[in-house]
Amino acid sequence: MGYNVLIVDDEREALNRLQLHLEKFSDLDTITTCTNGREALTHIATQSPDIVFLDIEMPKLNGIEVVQQCTPPYPYFVFVTAYNTYAIEAFEQNAIDYILKPYDPERITKALHKTFQILRKDELADTATQYQQLISAFAGNAVHAPERAYIRRIAVKSIGKTVFINVDHILQIEGADQYVEVTTEEKRFTVRESMDKLEKTLDPEKFFRTHRSCIVNIEMVSAIENVDKHSSLVVLKNGKKVKLANSRKSDFQKWMYGDFTASN
Figure 1: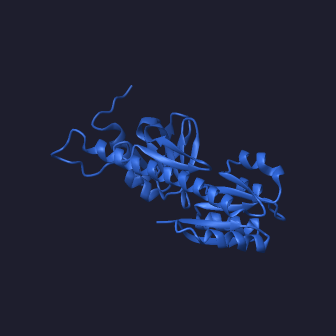
Figure 2: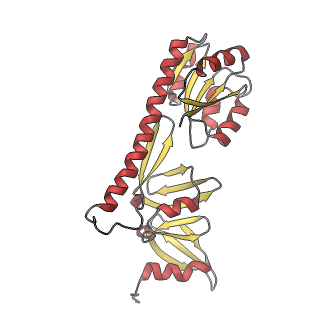
Figure 3: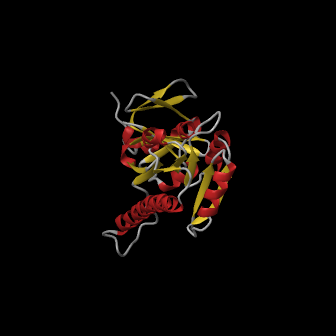
């Protein structure tokens, strides 16, 4: 499986020259082009390219502004420009590399290989996590393997790095269109995954779906509030309150209380 590249440049000649050079690399599946920042933002949001060669000097929306307005999951950016005055600002945006025009084929090749190495490290990290989960699931249980191995970490790709979230540190997970928002006690992360798919990877003994667009960690629940006869709220350790669907209330109480409930 190869990588998908987007080239963004308002100078058609420069764009075509870069495209011709990139077409020589078998590691690339698709090469798409855009001639302005607005078009690039739309493509990045809808197609999720792996690598973006991004011109900085463009009218209306320049390359720096494109990166600043992107939402996760982020591609890896290689800035291209005729001016060297943007180098510091480009690297402040976590750019993988910075190439000056006119394009030097060797310089482009070097930037591309550098990006390939980072992408492959991400893939190895994801694979290592999967193997770790399988090994943990089967450890000490060689005869009777568990039916399912649930994840212990979630990989979140950001610009230039991959962050791993320990699921035990999660407070809640909220659905947001094609993404989910994962909240820990320290930070909030955006992950490109559906609620339904992510829920299947989480241990149902530890995580409960309180309503259509929210999952909570049982260890992070501090109280349940009955608002009225038909409405309840789950109170998390950080003080946030999330809705508990009436149709799920009975299951939640059994899940939380088990066979024992004390009263004051």
